[in-house]
Image 1 (tube, rainbow, N blue to C red):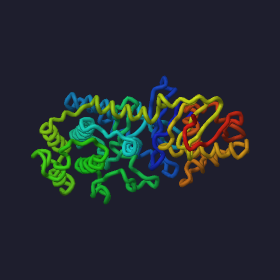
Image 2: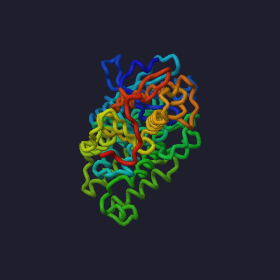
Image 3: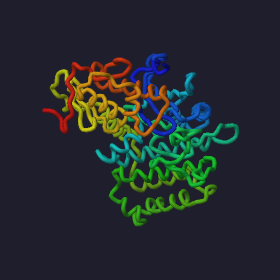
Image 4: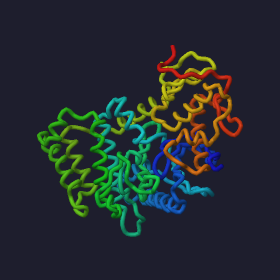
Amino acid sequence: MWLQRFEDLLPLRSRGAFHLYSARDQAARNEPVVLVVPAPRVPSDQALSALSQLARAHAWLRGQNQRLDPELSASLLENVPALDLLDVPEHPVALVHCHAVTSFEALAEQMAFAGPRLPYVAATHMERLLFRLLSGVESLSGGDSPPLHLGGFGGANVLFASDGRPYVLGFGFNVLLLRENTQPFGFNDAHFAPEVAAGAKPSGGADVYALTQFLRSLIPLVELPQLAPEIFAGDGPTRAAEHFGWASQHILAAPARERASAAEALDRLEQVWAELGVCPDRERCETYFGELIRSEFEPDAGERIELRDAVVLGPEASWVVNPDGVKHNLSSRAALRRILEALAKQRLSGNIQALSVGDLIAAGWPDESPIFEAGANRVYVAVSALRKLGLRDVIERYSGGYRLSPGVAVRFSASLPN
């Protein structure tokens, strides 16, 4: 199985036409990578075409970076990762050379419900970074370049390393915004210009439209300046109040060929930030997302509990305390949660027999019907991820399937044990 080339496999995204996994590539000295894998229903030829366009666009942008100013050139090399296509018999797979462990799509829910809000100076850094990358794409597109535009924008397009550094993935062919039937619409957090939604080819103006809509959707997640209500109502400082209306008129309401460019939009934003006395802060931005990621993926210091040879699960396996007494949150990792819950219920029923791979496919992805081989790959990745959470000696391979070891006590609890 080709996945055995990789260690520490963790699912980053398991919806849409292309799924994401973080891993370490044993063939490249355990380099951290992200795998882009087509969903089972995506025809192999379509997947190959899409991933080839994606890899070609990212390679072009990185290869032409010297044509940009030094700051933008460095940002492009740092934030737009390179891709390789793997020669996999079953289906094409792209290997992304970046250290990403999650996406903005995954973090947004945590930001909305767990806080704290994104500081405004951190939000402006992210806004500046994204508009600068789009302006670079505008500069490099045309002539003999391949298609470079995103065509839409959503939280799945921004990946994060554990230290909070962002990567933007999707130039040339935005595979992350496709549903499994390969249609580009249907995700609530993805934004498209009207003409792209109607079937037109992506353009620089369409990308600016999509990014503007995406950034406005994040307003509830940002710690805004005190003047924000007045600014949005048109009554605040002149430049700031004018910009919100300007963006609506010249980006969102303008005909496609008359939209402002990314460079024009950024220039207006720079004027607004100067008027408000705001300086985009990269360090604050990466620190915020780094801390958010650590709170999601690393155990809290106060949550080590004295247990021996026992596994405690929260309601619907929303969290798990492993035999070392370390709690891990699974609330945002649906497939892992459902598989662990199924294994625990089988164990508590008194049945020591394993659940088959087919049983675990059905448990982990109840609304999908993947072909068996693709589903088995998903189970393999999910079990590897669970074992990384301190359950390596708990989840056993047994009689062609998996089970929780009969020698380990298992129970569900509505609250953490004392």
